[in-house]
Image (cartoon, rainbow, N blue to C red; front, side):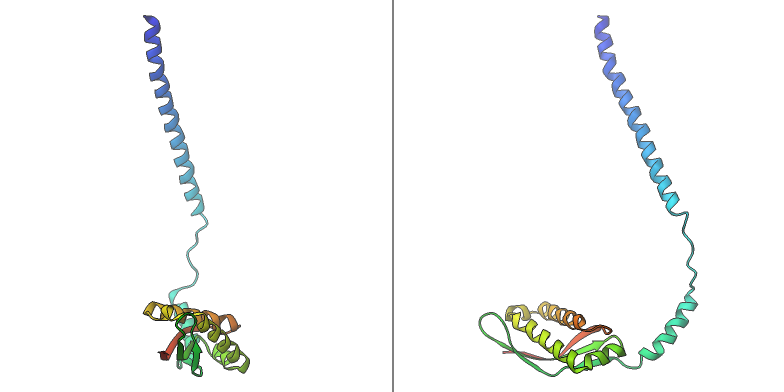
Length: 168
């Protein structure tokens, strides 16, 4: 009978021991995490630039660039689309450039030829079903901007506009 009481008391003691070990381990992990957060914020310094300094610098830079939007109008494209049935697309593309350097760079004859070639290849791969929806046209704008940006070294195409878009 004494052995039965001793065996039933043993599982209670081990369960209690596991609970204590878990609580101590939990407190140790939480304490280590709290210390790591505290230690990572020790090196924080307030910013040294003020809003007034940033406004002055922005005003000096924007005086040169905010004269007018720089939009380059490419010649019209007439291209065969990919897929069946065979269709053609006629479009006129306007590239809004981010800066004057980029506008001058896209005006160079070599870059104009490369940009037209990449756009024609891009359009040749597109089936009509890709360009039928608004989302398809927006995706085409992004692809054209990416292709032209891949050619340019200094300039960046900010946006692409279609002033003429006809699919037959």
